Length: 350
Image (tube, rainbow, N blue to C red; front, side):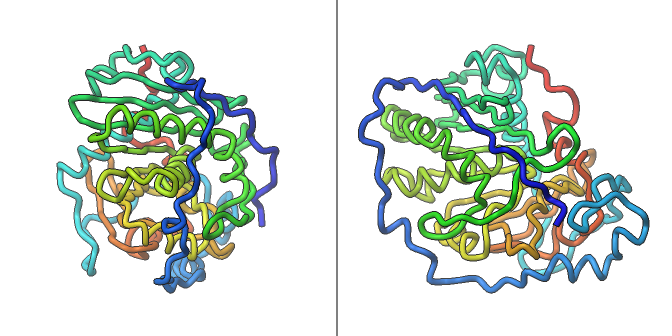
């Protein structure tokens, strides 16, 4: 295993609209913390099986990590949608929806937003003209950045996370070891990171849904921030009875895997709409590897095959499909993790 342990990112700080009220942290709702009785069968060998069919990366002398290439930049040779059940091409409206959320995730990297809570940059007022930042989140090492935003026009509360997945030398920051969490298992380091901001996140959501009871809660995250967005979504669902699958939504971009098939089955059983967007050959979306017993859970994978032409294939599956981004392993790269809309060029924060 080439993934190396690194120090945990700690000291996550937050500014909440009602930060002074820190009593009575919402308890878990027992009925929402039960493991799924519908455990989805999933072969952890799938990635290795597809890799053997596509060709072993190291045979070409490629730089690899856990058997995946990290710099394979040949365009994906695919011009038609796979003909299979639950596989279809994204509509312009579907693409527009996820692209806007990707751009919000990109803005998490703007210091004026994540550090100062301002919403006056040119992209800010273009994407959500009436947006108001109610809370910000910044880790001590500035590897996790985030904000809570309210739009009256969209009747939506957005919680947005960005996060850096690589260290300066190109190694993943996270050691993928499982730890127990009600009712399943998560990635230890990723959940430990979330636990540093858990109270701030939950109190922020609780405050905002009390102030805006009819608004949807839309949680978004990019890369390492995608994992934080997923934990925040599940934690809020487990503690706040006002949130259900009809008003709570999750969209991630280049999110790493965070749990095993029991965890993934639990995510699917909540019936919360989770859109997991994977750009081209994005390596981060395939870490931790399946052969370490990790798998994504959720309802929809949007695989961006060609950003320039908006050629996006959707795969419906409770866990992962072998028809979308898994179909091209092991030929992946890190660069595509920064190729989502709003991130493909320097983020405009002015």
